[in-house]
Length: 364
Image (cartoon, rainbow, N blue to C red; front, side, top):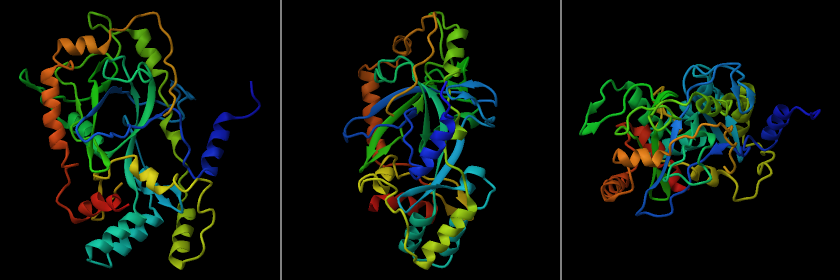
């Protein structure tokens, strides 16, 4: 056994690289290069970890109160600075507060947009996901457990499912209730369309026609307990994926920026093309987030191999085809219709600041 603490080394590496640590276990939706096609990837969102649970990182450091870990970061001096307000909900953030104060001093839309772009973070939602063997999924993802930092556009679909009490009717089934129970779950289809230069996830959906099923099952749709246990044991400790929140350091940074003092380590050790533009392009900017004090936040390469088990799981595509989710003409027709609708981008609430932040990165 090595004398070095790998967790400590990773943490220090993350700090040294300006919190832009590239985690091989993070799934990032690929960019869609084609205006006329939709990229589809299917996965199950996994249930939350409890402190002490076995996971890919050893054991979980703390318990998750929900299936996701909310997070967000400010991007300043080519570095990410985790936002304590977004992470901790009630914790104050000096950078956010300064942004709120500055936005309150002007009614000019372009000025408010520039302030929001400079000072406010984008909220994201980290979840563990399992990619079943499915003809829709790339081979390199099949059977893998990774974590994903989902956008608000995707999270809204998940939230709507939980808040929905109605399963619909056979002609129009609806996903409803808790969708991440390992023995009674919906498969989620991430649909990556294109809205200008950005990805759009507007048409993503749960496969409600298939219904809720165990994440791993036999040909009779009965759960395979050992396989499910192996999947859950490969979840990732999401709390360790983000840098420490330091309000005092953020207050000093805000003061430095307002004073116009020279900034140190501007490049954070990255090439010129490995900076904010690249980071901003990874997600669609047509995202909206929580309204806080009347301000809206705009807010991998390898995966861990799933633990081997003796039971053989049924391929998702064979079951989905039987339920009408195959890549047949009807599915293609529906996809074409949804792609056309996706061109409008994310649905944005009727709020001036949401409009501002939805437009922000399109200027980059």
